[in-house]
Amino acid sequence: MSAWDVPQQPKDDPRIEIEERTTPFQGYFRIDKYRLRHQKHDGGWTDTMQREIFERGHAVAVLPYDPARDSVVLIRQFRLAAHLGGMEPWQTEIVAGIIEAGETPENVAWREVPEETGLPLSRLEPILRYMPSQGATTENLFLYCGQVDSAGVDGVHGLDHEHEDILPSVHSTDEAIRMLEDGQLQNSPAVIAIQWLALNRQALRRRWLSGA
Image (cartoon, rainbow, N blue to C red; front, side):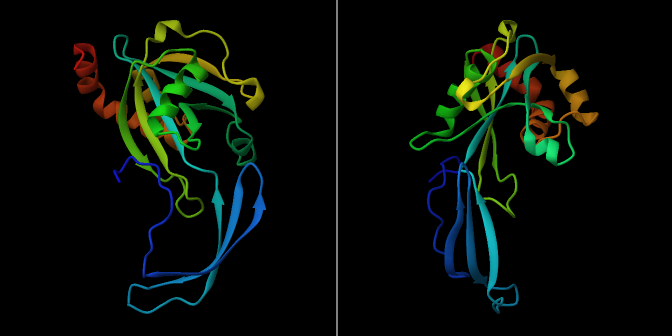
């Protein structure tokens, strides 16, 4: 199993003893409740504790990047959780989607970029696989940079049956970095992807523009 495989079942670990798992809520998302104990740093064991885990599956996020114009495509859409958390309800984000059964992260990236921006994707560069909130959810996020031609950005996109209302816009890489520095980017996929591009843009441009 590579670092970029979608996780299936957790590995058995002798340092962790799960006594019980129940599912008190199952809707679009799921809440599992656990009774468990685990080994401590001194070699002893904790008392039995209770933890609730939010299950939403695994996700992919893609920063669409145009190396010829040195520009990125960001999207803007309404997020209820951001509103309830005291943040800007219409978040500036990068493309993202949930990994469905039988899909690879790459499958999701190739599907979601045209769906949310209207632009075809030319190639993908893996950035990072990480956990957005490891204290609360098992979600793994697979983060990529994807090559696009940003000249074609136009209109509003997304799937009606998913109530998506997604507005893409083109920004120079320098402008996107300023947005990050000014606090206009408030979600981890966008923050991490723009930070990565700031560090890697010249090498990435050379490689993609040369066709390597």
